[in-house]
Length: 73
Image 1 (spheres, rainbow, N blue to C red):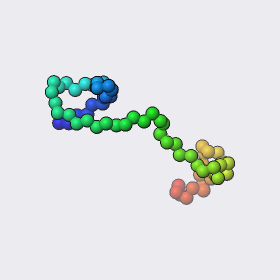
Image 2: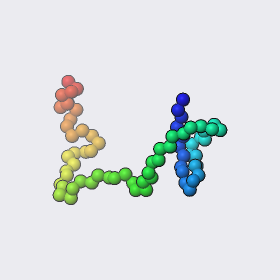
Image 3: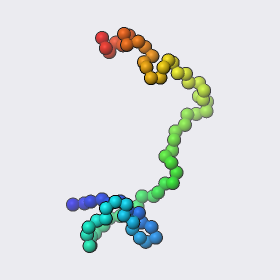
Image 4: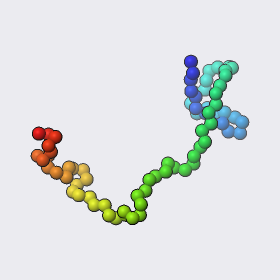
């Protein structure tokens, strides 16, 4: 059965981040994930639409009355 363990390889040493496998000898497969120090890319709207949005009514309650909801009839 295959099991996965998370570790960091640094200067020829393996530092286990989770439990260490309880084996004395094993065949292993190593997958190297490149670390990214930057935060995930955040999408931003184009400057051409900046300041053009409007909030119609309360952003918590519906914009139309519940009596006008066709799905509730």
